[in-house]
Length: 276
Image 1 (tube, helix red, strand yellow):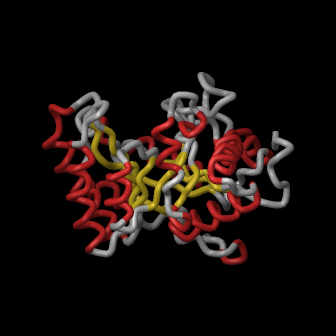
Image 2 (image 1 turned 90 degrees about the horizontal axis):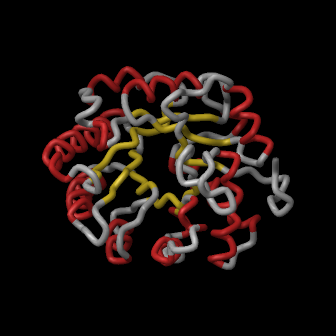
């Protein structure tokens, strides 16, 4: 249901959602819940080949749903798959990005070399397919190695013409500045509403207006007042509302700006020129 403070004539775009391990048995109900909350646009991310395939199937049934295909860094060992296999998605009409891909040293720093190798091959895939990349980067608390490694690879990617978004970004302000200089977009999600997430709010205040995206990372990271529950694209208005209050914007500006940024980043044409 759409909250009363959500402008009823405007539409949000959730730029990063997942279907979860069990997929989605009732796609129509899933989409309807988001649409009724004012979030008719969303992009479903894959974390391995199978979840990418499920995301592609879902997106094929809805004009305003898109998908990304990729291999999450924590899956490079559990579900190894060559980047070339993901070229199978290249001709899907709603294939909008490569992702999510990246580096995660929070749990598995011992797989660093493998993660870097796989990350590089998927960035090369994004360049070949002329798609932006959705990047996951995480390190141990206070660590910077993952951000340093990612910066090196993304510098090469950006200089070769690649575009990317740092999803659920939690690096330092210095990291924000150096990635921003590469043209990075930044995904702002439910963490901006968390009571103890002052570091995330400090980052959100600095995101460039023209490269700021909204995301849920559903079914994870549900915003307050739904924290602890399963997240869903239909809960994105609460994140938008918190971001608007933080930056001193109206909801109209927040919705209009972030949706416009998302359509530009994913190269989505106007509604009268829908991808078929």
